[in-house]
Structures are given as C-alpha cells and as structure tokens.
Length: 197
Image 1 (cartoon, rainbow, N blue to C red):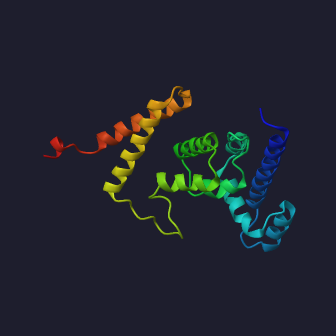
Image 2: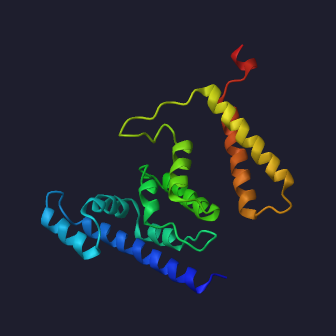
Image 3: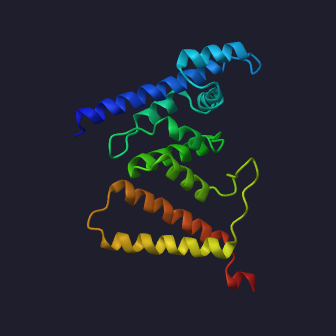
C-alpha cells in the first residue's frame, strides 16, 4: 500500500499529464501560423510555447482510450509514466494497430520495471535502432556480428537469472514464451549452412 505522500504525488503527476494531453488536444484545432492562439493555449495550460508542439503530437498519436491506459500505469514506487516520458514515447510513429500494441507493451514494461524516462529512451533506441536516429538522420546499422554477440549476452544473462529465481511472475512467463516464438521465427528466416550449400 502506498503512503499518503506517494498518493498525492501520483495525483499531481496525473494532473500534469492530463493538462499536457488537454493542451495537445486543443492544439489540434489551431493552425500552425496562429501564434496568438498558441500563446493563449500556452498561458491557459501553463506550458512553454515550445512544448505545445510535443503536446500536439501526443494528442495526435494517443486516442483518449490509449491515454487512459497510459495514465493508469504505475511504477513499483507508485509514480506514473509522467510528462517526461512522453517525448520518448513519441520517438516512433506508432501508426498501425500492431505498432500501437508494441507501444502499449513497452509502456507496461517501463512501468513494471520502474524505468526512468532516459532508460525508456535507451530501450527504444536499442530495440528499434533502424527507426530511431539523432538529429533527423537515420541511425547507423549495427554490424551483424555485434548484434549476434549482444543477443547471446542478453540471453545468457537472462537464463542465469531465471535459473537462480525461485518464483516467476506469470507476465514474465508470457513474455518469455513470446520471445521464444520471435527467436524461432528469426531462426527460420536465417538460411542454414545446409540450405546455403
């Protein structure tokens, strides 16, 4: 059970996130050249005018239902994925239904693991290196040998931790099963030496 202080903090974070989303929804009705209206919205929601572009993108990418899911998530310490997480969640376009499911799973994982906003950003850059770049440039491709080495290291570390664990959360088991299918699909996509010969 969370302390009264933690509950107040969570309520304050939720209010800030709702404020940011509401500003974005209102920004969807404003033309890009309507500076007076933008300044009015910035004052109304107590946001820096530069933050309104991010708020607009947030409202464009998240339906009300998707926002409701995001605001309901809690980290182990009781905190929300607050406004500082939003720019990282907007890093990718997330347009199709399957992309939105990946985003929802990523949000849930961030909350369950108690990631900070920069940690979420690092995970997104590591999982989607071809889609995330800096300064608008396409990210450099990771050499295949390095990618294989990193994958083996992660799987080895995960295996060792799982063998030492006495209790496995059902959600973790479900993720592991999903990962197993992804690895099998990847294995099937790579030509074997027998097929290549």
